[in-house]
Image (cartoon, rainbow, N blue to C red):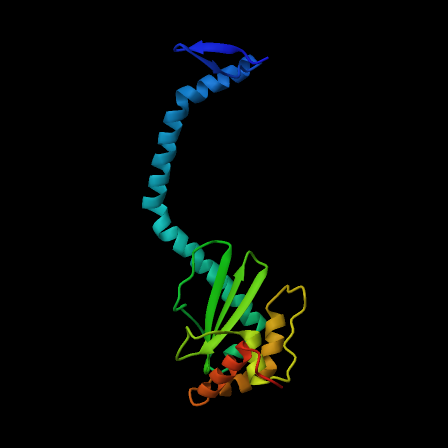
Amino acid sequence: MIPHILSHGRLSLRLRPKRVSGRVLIFLIEIYGPVLRLVGFILRAIYRVLFSWWLIPALVHRSQKSFADEIKQAAPFLFAPQYGGKVISDPRPQTRDSSFRSVCIASGNLFLRFSQWRMESYSVRVSPTLTPNDSYDLLDALCVVDPAAITELPPEIDGWYHFAGLLEPKFEQMQRSFNPENFTDSKRKFDLLRVGKLHI
């Protein structure tokens, strides 16, 4: 039964621990709780001042380097000498959420942004190097380059080699399509694809 306790002239309900140890724990929390919160605040402040300004960027850089190595291993053709592929800074910096990874690669006329969320959601977007923010989904880009090509990914994606397998055979065609001289026509095809009027 819950005891009724009269406090300051008002009837209130309070749960009384059944064991002495429970009452002692509550007593200690009430006594030392403010002190522990103060210590926690001080430790967070020390972390921000001494560590966060360099540790978080260092961890992000390490994660990005590891991610870039994955892309290089899965799609080495991006870094072939004739294309001069290299990892570059993202013109639209993403969140520093540890669940999100991204890396940008400039290769010939192409700017490719690889990103991954929670190690399972894969995404590749492609754009001309001159206008990196004018990006398109890789599968749409492959369809524009060659509408008759098969651009399907397996239901379960477990690595970037799936994307590399689709991109490599059409990479030279994509280089031509994203050439500044040809991109106006390619952009028109993207517009047709968006409204469902790009036919094979």
